Amino acid sequence: MGDRVSLLPWLSLTHVHNRGIAFSLLGGVSWLLPAGIALTLLFLLFYNRTRWTRGVVARPALALLAAGAIGNLIDRLRVGAVIDYVDLSVWPVFNLADVAVTLGAGLLVLTVLRPDRHLARGN
Image (cartoon, rainbow, N blue to C red):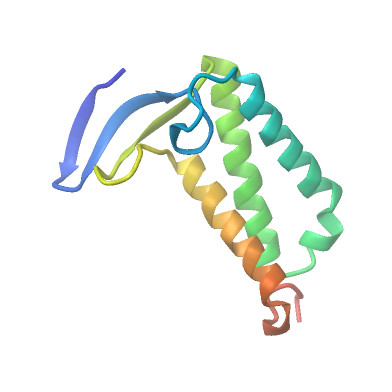
């Protein structure tokens, strides 16, 4: 815990346990809150999967979002916290599951905002 390995001047691997939600916010909350948020998100996404899986961009977006949420949920169930390790020195430490969630959510927002650009439909 807290070990740091410098890879580049702006990039390190730092072992951190995130007990809060995104970017260590609300660090004193029980692990049940973030786990409940992740499970609710996954339920809503899969409950509406016919809407989200129509498009060529929406499918990978949903996969990224679900994979990231499941990865972080596994950490919470296994260790009681999310294990973060990517340290850019100017941003809170994060992990690849966080990247997947962020990219997936961003792509899903694009499919909602720009359906006329063939993002939401497989045409």
